[in-house]
Image (tube, rainbow, N blue to C red; front, side, top):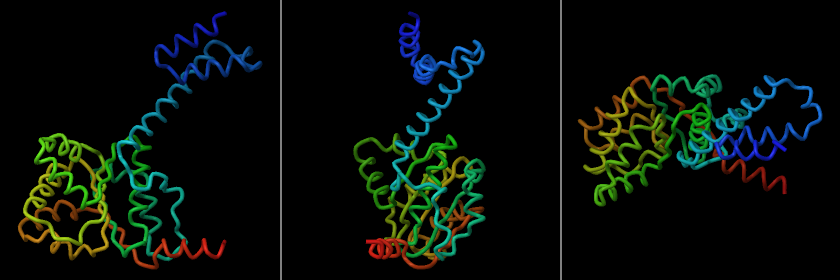
Length: 250
């Protein structure tokens, strides 16, 4: 008789994990052999796991990763593209985010830069870090609109407060004066307090040209490149290889 009221009360208290575990245990004959402490431990374990899953899902929704299914467990190390396996696995521990360091991933189109960045972003969400993914062209378009409609302070806060900011597709268009100022403010406020991951087809030594103003370029890149990890990829397009493999398998 107590089963349903207890289950309903757990739901009312928003202890959904405990409620589900309670129902499952009631349906198992061996549950009768468990003591009160064992019952409670199982309920608490399920509640903790349930809340952890909800937190990760919420962080993933907020991150808006381009490749939602990207995972470091699925990284292809066999295809020759100069991916440093030891370094990437070290990055997968997320210690670089804890230390507020940056990561720069460069390489030709189709090499998998965005996918690798999203895989690290997904792992960061699993480690309870906040993540935000932005393509560079769309980021500046959002900032321009935000300046005009009064949303800039809120957008700016979201960019500087997130633990990991992923800026995808750096360059090749040169920045205008407004874009330089906005980027400088973002990088300055994040320096030493958050991690920034940038992907680009352009070699790092050409990024000064993208910023297109020596003083701003020196200030911005000093904060991004200094003490940053680098993954400099090179090799065949992963998209072309995948398409070729699919054709052969068909």
